[in-house]
Image (tube, rainbow, N blue to C red; front, side, top):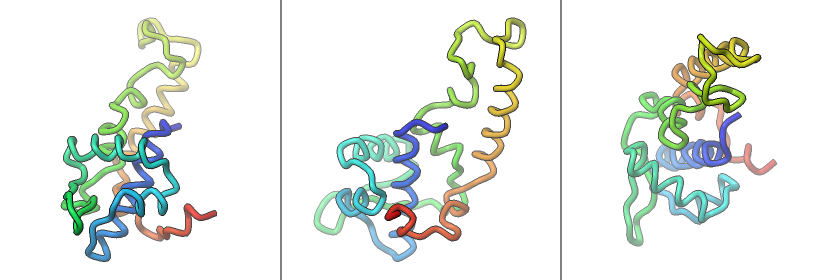
Length: 141
């Protein structure tokens, strides 16, 4: 349902947060190895998340990516919006430009229900929720 960029971004954020719980920053190579994501693509996603102030980064030998906000203040919605925008929550599920309540596509109302539930799920879940019960081994399967 989420774009590949969003999936990789969420996985990377959980790894960054896990490192943060240990009081350390994490470099791109270790992060991508743990999250099982491609380094160049993940680096672009992380640059965007730094720009959107979801995460921070520091260059140098003791540098890496880190999170300064409380994990329970970072919603899944804010992560998805920072990476992909809000199209997944607002646009027609069939990609039709003219679809709206006055001129609905054949699946408009069904997609509307899905979008509403997805929006609620993303607003009601935080990075802290994603970390609850989270283990790095999840990506090693």
